[in-house]
Image (cartoon, rainbow, N blue to C red; front, side):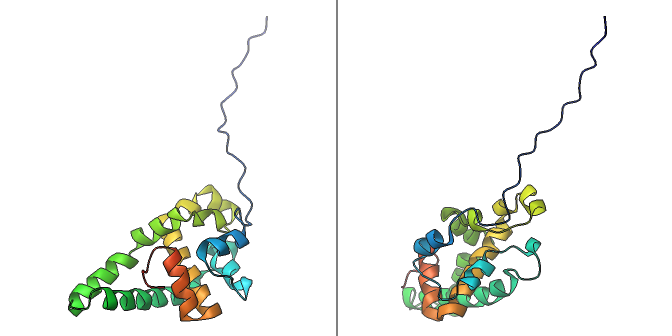
Length: 164
């Protein structure tokens, strides 16, 4: 009688999600309340740096500044009697990484991200920094595509500004 040698258990890793969008870009546009004239900008805003040199980083950079301006304008109207220090702290609270990631999660933005297979394995779609960066990149893409009012519409849809 031959003795059976037990096989080593191998961890089953689910196949990675395709580097392409899991969610529809048209659905995302409807969700955000803005239709891009140049959809390439939205595609770029949804492309993680793991996918190569054409990614969301530059749009994130401009989106960060645009979001600061939009929130500052909102706070000036909402808090007309507050001093600069209070307004600065309130703006910081609105645009902090945790709040931006919360906005991204509430809109399920992670499912729209294009990420590499390795980044998918590392669960980048759920990463707080990645989600916050994606919010800024989308706002930057809206601003680049349609100006400040387009960015305001998107920021409003994400719950980051009150005025529309």
